[in-house]
Length: 394
Image (cartoon, rainbow, N blue to C red; front, side, top):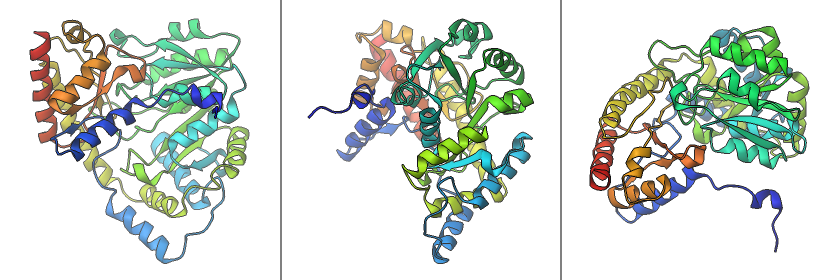
């Protein structure tokens, strides 16, 4: 049997592969420290759990509108006013089965065959695959480490062709954690407007920003940019609700309507109970969110210091999210391993530390470490990585 060409061309997720291997080793009784996960290690806050229980007790277990509950759309509208000083209507919002599904659906309705989407490297692993599934073409532009992994206006201008339809911006970024400033967004936005490009702004890590930095949505920079921006967001990272699968897209009414029509034939609607839980997430105070953020910031500061103490390892310090993306090029070069992927595989085999090779994010010189685990685990992981480096590279 021959499968469809569109799925044969897909690249397996490197994050899922490393997580699967780590789980298998754990099941065999090994002391594995997993730093591959892309989800908070905290449980969903009690007030959200209670809202879900209440919804079930009240029989709110039926179909909802394909694009999401009106009450949840209103909660999202209020969130944008409160957090981003942006005004949207219900017709400009679609609630989806996770932010990943929002992105997938957006590319399905936005792209025609061979339309190009500019994807800065490093990128989240699913961007290029979703573009390819929509018969579009990802155009990769390497954001330099010396520029803190941020795309420059010059790079964007150079990458644009007559076939360019959109650009993806992810701020704070997965895997680097870097954050674009308002000035940087404005400069990129001006070029996007000049060439009439759609801007896909992935803001899923918006609430996880550290130090004195602040998140700015590119849609808030100017009314013109708002018209050409589709914001992707959700409650997965901000409220530790990865398994609940509630995301959303916000922007141009025609685009959102097309997305709603598509999902009506794909998923019918996001899970009703999860939608009521998400309403509670946005209507409640952010005290629990702030606690989680504070814990992540403490972990970041300590793990970053432990990692940069390892010989020949360099690292851009993140502004947000919960990842480090250190450069291990010199370490691998001095080792008997041919690639970073081989180095990462042997680290897991010998030291039982699971991290993700940067090749899955388009950056073969780097690795991604998630600090969504306890400080004790992070400290032990750093010790094991250092021991591994000293064994093979010094």
